[in-house]
Length: 66
Image: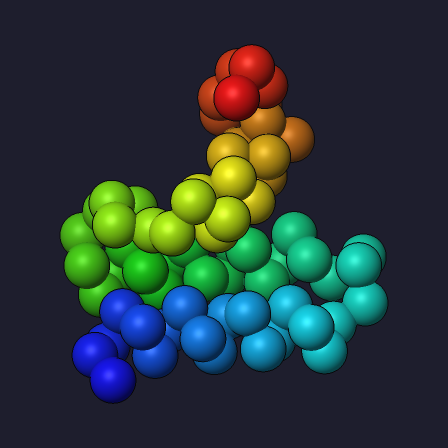
């Protein structure tokens, strides 16, 4: 399994274990690690890209018209 797939699988498993109130922290942590490892948020699967977009809208970093 390549590094991207491994990180995505770990993130999905972590989200399953966490209480919904902890989701924003998990998403923030994942995006920080992804950007550190790969330099950008490119090549995210659509389902994770959607979570990141919702989080960005919550923080006022993006429009919520996705």
